[in-house]
Length: 324
Ligand SMILES: Cc1cc2nc3c(=O)[nH]c(=O)nc-3n(C[C@H](O)[C@H](O)[C@H](O)COP(=O)(O)OP(=O)(O)OC[C@H]3O[C@@H](n4cnc5c(N)ncnc54)[C@H](O)[C@@H]3O)c2cc1C
Image (cartoon, rainbow, N blue to C red):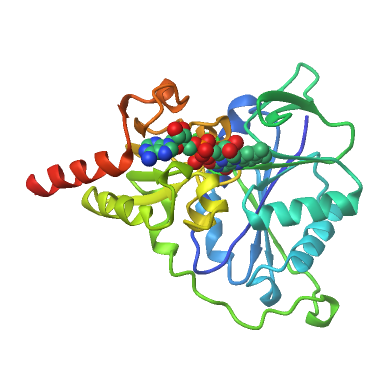
């Protein structure tokens, strides 16, 4: 029997991470008998317990403190360390966003244990030991990992697993009030600047028009934006487009970006590298526009258009406008 702990931060302007329920679903499916604890850190979080009662977990720990209202890696890691002393766990899961990655790596360093980041699948063997699958070696091979240290720390990207109906369990709720003082931590939050992109999250879009290096310049994204607007969608991009500063990182699709599953994904000037496919292969309909007929993206596309996007997209825009 392995004790599982899934940790999430909660702040009032955010929803609970979908990833929580995705991980709970996958663990319940694979090993229904392993007890699952969810640890939520934040301030004024007591009302969240309703979300978890009868949602497939055995225990909910609410770590509540004013200094946890906004994320700081030091305070969060400190509190998780304290909680683990009182409620030990064998396997710890974190969301693979920047917060989860920051905490998981700091915690692994502190405990001197291994960390498996960005895993894409997991399985339990007959002895109950966990094995992880993740792209490795230049990201072109899938590696199977087994931990040699304990506890085992894992990060998983949102969207990796499906949320499934969860078994009803009686959930024990524990309120944990950590002792924290601002002066114990080197980081102080001076101001929170609102992310003006937050209402355009690509994870929630039903239609995505994604551009890659083939777009050639930042201005090319204006054309994609126009198409996305007509389709009531959002723009997204490959890592190459992000690295070239044509679009922000929050719009990156792929293994180190976001995992998306829109109804329609239009990949424009994107070659279809494995790391990109990892983020969009679950899209219902994939349309690829690429001037190279042998681009790998065509292998997973439902529809493919071979040609220069500068010629094709204006024609699509024109057609859509005519039909409006
Ligand atoms: C650890 C690691 C993590 C990574 N994570 C990610 C990730 O999260 N997301 C991601 O996307 N990548 C990721 N990558 C990078 C990935 O390997 C590729 O390098 C990247 O996806 C390539 O981006 P691209 O398809 O835009 O560019 P390219 O591979 O350069 O492809 C450009 C395409 O545009 C086409 N093209 C050129 N001009 C035109 C035109 N005028 N009209 C139409 N088509 C045109 C070309 O034929 C080509 O197919 C990662 C790599 C590593 C090593």
